[in-house]
Length: 355
Image (cartoon, rainbow, N blue to C red; front, side):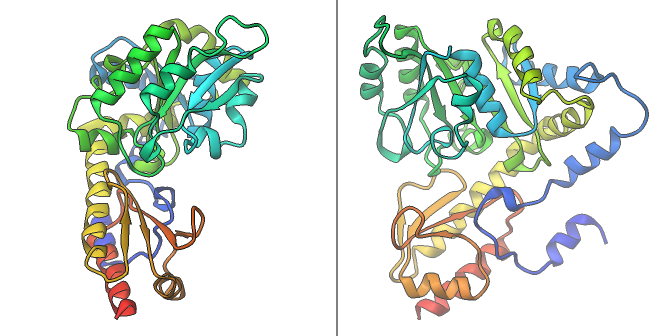
């Protein structure tokens, strides 16, 4: 029995807590096994790492430098530490991953840079608030100095910055002479929704450093620090090594990223995840007492469920976050491995419980 048939015949999966709970795509596993034979230069001197750089240059239509790391936290924290001095301010949304979920790594790796939050609806930074924030106490030795802005695409609630919104933030950064970083842990999910080019959603909008995610979208464990501003590269090389993220057998990270980008695997995986989220939303909207929260644009679904419905789904073995953000609020996350049968099984249970 081949892998795809085994997946088709499997029981419906019950986990919707995160896209991190899925395994790796078969193409990724095959690439890791394929690069295992023979010898290769260590520390990124292998041919695969060089091919990944060329892939990304062509994909983004820009000369750039690439630093592969195993985690998104490492990618984000290293980018921000390279873009901000210890006395700098890093502006982000209050709901961002760097503010809530990285255990102070941006501050630690930057030796004390201050994370400053700028609010806005749908977990997106409000441009007007940002324009004011980046000009507060500039030049005042008693205050941290504006250094960079970090935006998340797609956001922690599944919303997506439009190209116009990205361009407006990029213009604020250019005008204030601060850097712009993008946490792209779900970059592919946003890209397939917008239907634009990777260049339009990154450097053309003013992004200087991108944390390009792959782990949430089918890789075993690899993220790419993509530097469009190559002046950051010399510092990044030393920072990655000092942080313990320079793999000696880098070919195993490179093999994952190379396979991820080949034949549009990354886009197909993201389309699958987004499509299953839409299937879930369409089904939930037909169930009495369910309220969908926000505009679902990627693979994250927030909704409000009656307490009995939440309890019933949990008792049936389904796994998802609930009551973490507010009483009655539930989050479902789909992945590249989520199938229609998984969604339909969840909806069937929800319909029975609601009835």
